[in-house]
Image (cartoon, rainbow, N blue to C red; front, side, top):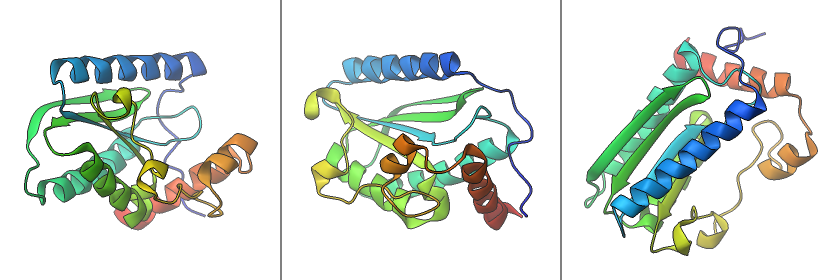
Length: 183
């Protein structure tokens, strides 16, 4: 059995997670207001359970975020106009603003999310005040398949809604992904 990466860290309750979601949404709106017509990229991890950040989770995020940024930077036209990084108890997050097309970036984000086990842990929102009224661009808008569950390959939202898998099973899978990459 793989050693859990969730043995350390500060437990977060639902109030902290919801407060973080509000702060993220506020920052995204602030960035869209400041950089009208530009694309905002918000990157975070999907981490089940009360431990959302520690050294190993941060390492996973940093490694994956670096891979994603390299994919973006390999495209002509990608230039960072602003960047903000958070390392909070609710999890590491990264925000970038660029003039590159939101639809093009979302396609790259989907390629990254689907390209590896670590990519599957990421949640990358792509927003632009002039596209979809600033709402995150969805996979279905690009006629891309929905995300699959880490454990059973059913649609991830279906498994999350029904709580088909326990938090401990999901954490074990994430710990296994970590071990394959870093051990």
